[in-house]
Figure 1 (tube, rainbow, N blue to C red):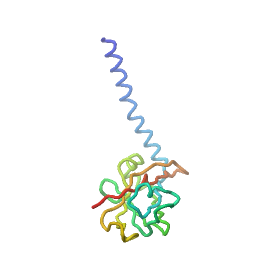
Figure 2: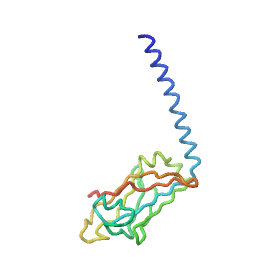
Figure 3: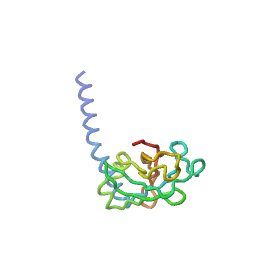
Amino acid sequence: MAMKIVVMLSLLVVVAMAIPEAKAQLGILNDLLGSANIQGTVLCTLNLKDNIDDNGDGAPAFSNAQVQLMCGGKVLSNATTNGAGKFSMKMDSVDSLVYDLSSMLNGCNLMVPTPLSDCNSNLPSVGSLISTLRFLGITNSVANITPSGFHFVPS
């Protein structure tokens, strides 16, 4: 029984020592990343299924909509959709001093405060579209991030 306790304590010490090393490695990854690019498409719909359609089939594009990157209740960045409902936000290394990649993916959301009634008068004039973030990969030291799918949140 005493041997089992010694083995368990040894295992806990090894795990506890590995955590700072993993965090340090993530810090190195964040240092290698020069920036992050968040891009996607916003469609004029209440339906999540329609809104994640990358081909634009189904719901029409939500043009001229404001898209905000919200982190900890603050707007960290923003963009405006084009005529096809597409947006792109580039986060440079200065922004990464505030939020590392892991924090951004787990603690930030994209929000579209522009009323849906701006693209379709039959849709609500209060409320907003919100999406979590999805990491796609790294290209040329740029982290590529996209919305996981917008859904409507009434006010």
